[in-house]
Image (cartoon, rainbow, N blue to C red; front, side):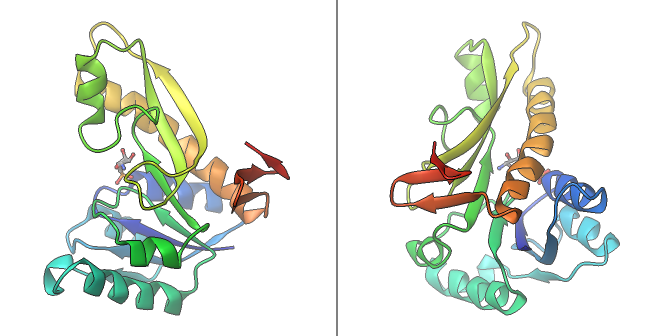
Amino acid sequence: HRLVVLISGAGTNLQAILDAIAAGDLPARVTLVLSNRAGAPGLARAERAGLSTAVINHRDYDGREAFDRAMIERIDAAGADTVVLAGFMRILSPLFVGHYQGRLLNIHPSLLPKYPGLDTHARALAAGDAEHGCSLHFVTDELDGGPLIARAAVPVNENDSVETLSKRVQTQEHSLYPRVLRWRAEGRLHLTDQGVELDGETL
Ligand code: GRF
């Protein structure tokens, strides 16, 4: 199962995926790590693992579709059974999302449908939520609104800051992404007209 991973930043989710592959827990290989930022620390992780990397800077393109078209070309040349958004901080056009319909996954740091968009940890703290977490979903045109695959919850503690809370959530992200990708790699997880299907059952 060929994965292409898209990043913009630290790449700790990418690292968790690479670690799971190395440990034999994820029967997949990463054919390309693509970043829109040349300085993304995640690129160094990819290089350390001997993977192909590419940088496609959105600033070099005239508009979202031209940028997305350049990414599609690169991703398809690498070969992707699943395209993994792992801290990729650009909004993708309907062109891109449509092209990878059913094989495009994203992780979002909130218990969706709560808190789509940015600053999720601060918003959960401000709301006084007792619980927070992360969600894995298929990507559709609605921002952070695609069909949910799985969520992982953590408690919010009284003295939590954005840092302590986001760290707790990230630990969950790092086990959730490899787990869900394993379902994909084993051919158990699909997006159908009925919604998300896992092991032949619609969630
Ligand atoms: C994660 O919190 C993810 O949920 C969000 O961006 C962050 C990426 O972190 N979409 P990393 O680059 O994987 O370390």
